[in-house]
Image (cartoon, rainbow, N blue to C red; front, side, top):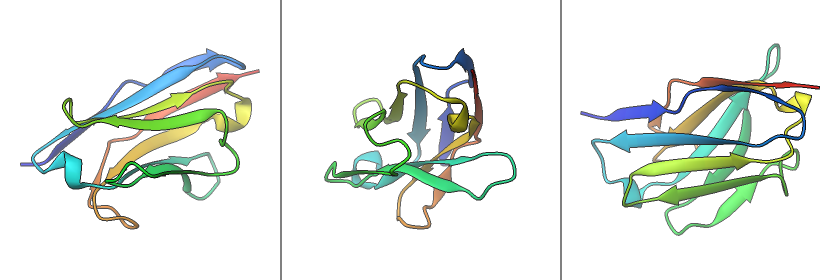
Length: 116
């Protein structure tokens, strides 16, 4: 049985940092490509960052240089380190696991709110 659990959301001030995590079970974690998406109110879902099974990373232009995607296969956990957060980063954040680009498994989504 596949299980995907994201860490709790956060409410922070502009300029602060937050780490998101996504822990999964029920499949071969190390073989999977993974990603973080976000959806802001009234906007389409945006691919924020991705990492393939060979650890190649890509980032959207809006977060490049501020966000870092990483994974720990021994802990079966995907991370997103978000630095210098801005109000435009306010959104629901989702982890997506396995078989990009559509992905098989998704986290429940958590809210990140950045106040200026």
